[in-house]
Amino acid sequence: MSILRIIFAILLPPLGVFLTVGIRGAFWLNILLTILGFVPGIVHAIWIIAKNDEKRV
Image (cartoon, rainbow, N blue to C red; front, side, top):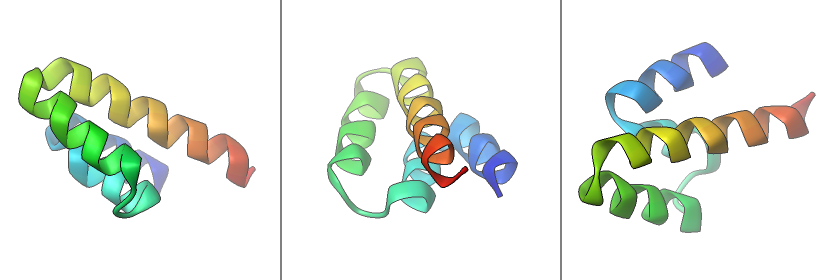
């Protein structure tokens, strides 16, 4: 599932974050970062996904 979330994070960063944490602060921050610049949104989304995958292992 994490590979699919990373693909979503590259194509549409808020979707990748939503699939990882739901509608929380990180999701809204990612929407803001994506609006301000697409690359910061991607970096944040991948960081959130990787951070949450560490907790699950």
